[in-house]
View 1 (cartoon, rainbow, N blue to C red):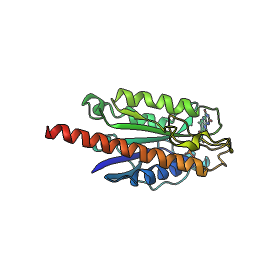
View 2 (cartoon, protein in one colour; view 1 turned 135 degrees about the vertical axis):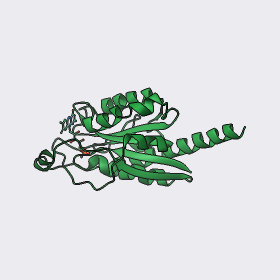
View 3 (cartoon, helix red, strand yellow; view 1 turned 135 degrees about the horizontal axis):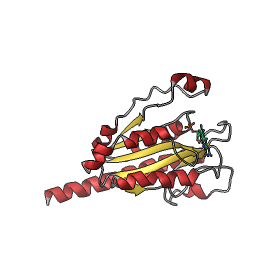
View 4 (cartoon, rainbow, N blue to C red; view 1 turned 90 degrees about the vertical axis):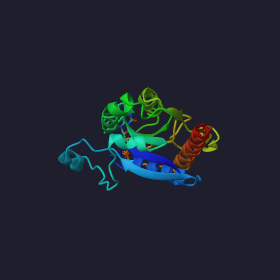
Amino acid sequence: MTRILVLYYSSYGHVRTLAEAEAEGARTVTGAIVDIRRVPETVPAHIRKSSGFIEDDTPEAAPADMANYDAIIFGTPTRFGMMASQMKQFLDMAGGLWAQNALIGKVGAVFASTGSQHGGHEATMLSSHIPLLHFGMVIAGMPYTFAGQTTRDGIIGGAPYGAGTIAGADGALQPTETDLAGARFQGAHVARLAVALSSARSLAEVA
Ligand SMILES: Cc1cc2nc3c(=O)[nH]c(=O)nc-3n(C[C@H](O)[C@H](O)[C@H](O)COP(=O)(O)O)c2cc1C
């Protein structure tokens, strides 16, 4: 079996909703086993409460867990045009995996939520690819075979770089049907790539 991890951080739930859609898409692929985990929160409880953060009972991941998967799909809200510090902190604790080459050749992908349409949506996805490339991961986006990303009907998130949603300045918007379809598409796309790479690896081992 090919193991897929959907790993996210979410303060207000938008990225969490997309994470569930990513996992749903990945689970449609034969041979894929999918887990959803969140990275640990770093914000103190009183600030989480006063800022209205969601309570999230999704199990936490530890950085070492990433070695156990064939593909990892990372989800993050935009913070000042880049990934949330909670996700960056998690990746910064994976230096041991980097030193052991433990993530080389795994599929890596990113999805994101931003408050405004042009407030760093694509920048967050693209800059989040950088640490994944340092890990030696093979980057997957959300190809144009997901035709929904070219719609002109309303405000949607997502790009060739990854699935996404626009939360609105006050967070009042929720992922649209197109956003969710994009996340499901990306999840399935990543899973198919991971299954293909895993089977190529096992063929090489047999040879
Ligand atoms: C400290 C902070 C910085 C943010 N910076 C940006 C930003 O640069 N651009 C933007 O469009 N939204 C920004 N936002 C809005 C978040 O991206 C938005 O709350 C998030 O996408 C919602 O996802 P979540 O519900 O999964 O937490 C920021 C929010 C916070 C709290």
